[in-house]
Length: 626
Image (cartoon, rainbow, N blue to C red; front, side, top):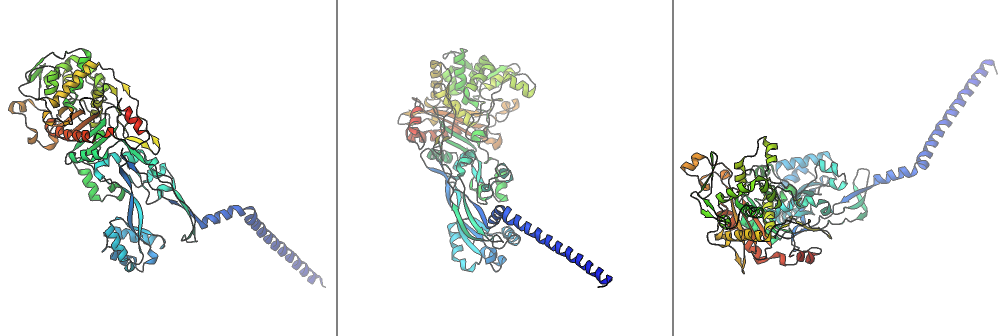
């Protein structure tokens, strides 16, 4: 072999060796990688592969019911008739939707939205077309089913409120979780289209208990995400039932009696604080928040001058007017600034410096003692009493009766009202308290504000002998009884309290009392009451000279508020009631007749003497009679 041939051979051998080593290295790398994937990472990747094959899905649980004190359903669940579209089963989605629009309401905007969804997602994924159909609409879809390829009628669950507007401010409503709700609670349940959370009222307060526990189903899916089978299913657990103190029969009666007005009625047990009826009118249909409002419906709600979305029972703040006069009278007796028999002359006017304060009765009441002043609601008498007490003493006593206080009540949005004081005015306005402001506070005007709930509590504390009762709506959540708030004692002299209560009794049950025409007598059970008429505008000196305009002559928003508070029976009291009619004019003409009817119905039903649906019901009902 020549030298040249030998060099060629050696070069070839080196290249072959390098190629062999390279090939061996490549196969070694592949083998190592295969070992790593198939042995070292076997469990991890098999789990990932399983996750790709098995898709866990949430099952929305049934929401718990809300019941009244006797077990009547106030909020429950009922079948929801729906229609869905599966695009892959429809030859022409647009044509199918057009045909469906002749059977059920389906506007152009909704149809375009469904078409966009059909184009942007996989064609086997169902699209909700309509929900909350009537049985007639649902039946028509079923009958025409063969003509509607891709359309499937299905039955789900939805929240049901049988009393709608009558309980809208008590129960609240449910609504779809928004982005903030999902950020606060990242549970996958909140991302389900059919899931709803409490948006207001008791639905919101007890939302976590009402939700229940979700179930899960594990379905097998292919590479495209299509479900090919169900592997495992774990059903959820329905939410807890919530029992309220409300008597729905009384609630419905009071709501119907208040219909057409703007205002509130609150009825409660003077010992336990159980709220038996809490009406705010007008109400709204809570289903609107579940189903969704149209822009026109939502605008109508917001623009309504009667403010149907505001719970006036706890968020409406009004001058209490003459409804506080029995409490001011009791304060005067307690402080010894007046004797029951002492008379004050009412000429219809009381000068103070350059200002003149007027009685509602233009030419006055003449000589008035304490009982007569409450019975006839004489302003001049209470200007004098307020002047003797002073604002500091009135502030103390009005707060004892629960005004200016938040009760941590069982509904969101409770307002505190306002009991003015020297310090409050100075801090708020920078101006010192004026003597004239003391006088008008004594007749429930000026800066003084109260909610209807506070007026009911005030009356309950006055009627029950001096227990610092607080209101409540919840009796039980699930199997857990809701403990009543602690009930402290307000130390009133029993003799003074009896005198003030007798004066309030005279308002309704003696001839000449401002509420005599609205007296109540149910099997000998009578009602003690106090009328109130609260001004919302200032009457000028010029108007007094020419004649004060009557409420009927004024635009609605300038008319006086009409108020009435009451307790019954007069002997052995058990119920307290407050009625406020916004711009109703006169308390005796507008609020008192409504209160009369509500209290009569209450005494006929006497719900506190009947067994209620709640843990320890019999024990707590007996306790309330103590």
